[in-house]
Every structure is written in structure tokens, then in C-alpha cells.
Image: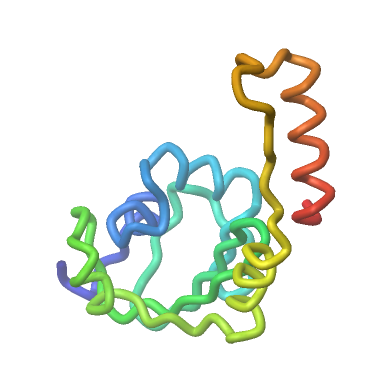
Length: 132
């Protein structure tokens, strides 16, 4: 796409595979989890090359620089043509720390589906562990 024109932020986030669906990207923008140049942004706002995108996905805050624009979803190998990862290593280490501490939920085998109360308890525990 031509760099003179902007692309909607929700389309761009979906196209470069930061979110699995466009509606998830839109919801993240509405909830203030996506910042462009340190400002919250609506899903319909256009972005251009050279801008910095901050995406908050618990427990990590990712930082990217836009180096190209696209509205169409691209393959995983082509993502590096559109964004540059500026996320500090200290943020990426949070994931490895979570894996090492084993922040997962274990249930007894054959205990069936969790009840509504058990599900809420698991969600509360997850929120405390992640810090959101």
C-alpha cells in the first residue's frame, strides 16, 4: 500500500498478526491496550509509517515501530517487512519467568468441566498472578 495514506489501526494490527481477529484488535483499542506514540487510540484512527505502537498483552507490553503499511493479512514470515520489534528483553523475560514458575492451572483428572464459581476463582487467580 502507498505510504502516503494511513491504515486503520485495527486492520493493521490484524494484518501484521498481533491479534488473531480484527474484532479482538478493535476491542483492545477501545479498552486502551493499544497506544500510538504514547496516546490511546480508537480502532478507526489511521496510522502511518514511522509511528510507535505499544500493545499491552498481559503480562508483557510489546513495542513496535511501523516500517510499512498493509490492510491485508500477511504471512508470518512477511511481518518483519511491516513492523520492527522494539520490545526490551526485560519484558520478554517475563514470559520465561512465568513458564518457569508454572503459572498454570491444574485440575484433577476426570473432575469434569469447571463450575461457574470455579471458573471465576481461576480468573481471579490469573488476574492476581499477571497483575492486571
